[in-house]
Image (cartoon, rainbow over all chains, first blue to last red; front, side, top):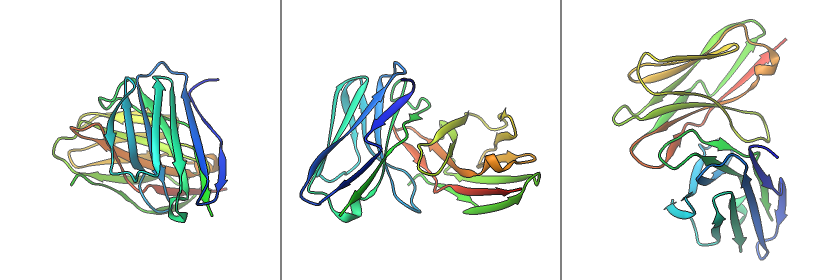
Length: 113
Length: 109
C-alpha cells in the first residue's frame, strides 16, 4: 500500500449505531488530519494530530471522537450521528503540522439514516 | 477571518480551449497557496504549492501562478481527462488550511 488509505470507502449507519473510520498513511509523516466535505461547501477541518498529540479540535460535536495510537494510524469513532453528518470524510497527512503540503486519502462516504 | 474565494463555480470548455481558474485569498499573513485536483468520489490530489508573488509552477497542461492578492490555474489546450473539481487552499499562521469551494471543470471532446 502506498500513500494514504481509508476504510471503509462507504458506510451506511443508523442514528443509534456506533462505527469507526480508519486511516493509515504510508508516507512516514508525523501529522494527520480529519476533514469533512459536504456538497457545495469548502472542506472543513475537524481534527489535527501532530506526533500523536491532538493540536486542533475545530469545535466538532462530541459524537465524533478521534483517536491517534501512532503517527501512521488515525481513527474517527462515530456514535449517535445525525442525518446532517452525512458527508465525505477525508483523512490527510503531512510531514508535520507546520503547513507542509497535505496528502489526502480517498475518503469514506458516510450516509446517516 | 481568513478567506479563500474561487471563481468561476463551474466552467465548461471545448477540448483545446484554454482558460484560467481564479483563487482570491486574504492577503495578510499568507504562508502558502495550494492547488488540488479532486475527481468525483475521490480525495483531493496535490498539484502545486506557491509561496511568493511572481512564483509559477507547471505540470503538463496546468500552470499555477501567484500574485499579491490572487492565484490563477491556467489550463492550456485541455483534454476531457482534465475534467475535475480544482480546489485552492491557503495557509496562514495557524495549523489550518483554508479551502475554497472549488471550480468544477468539464472539458468536452
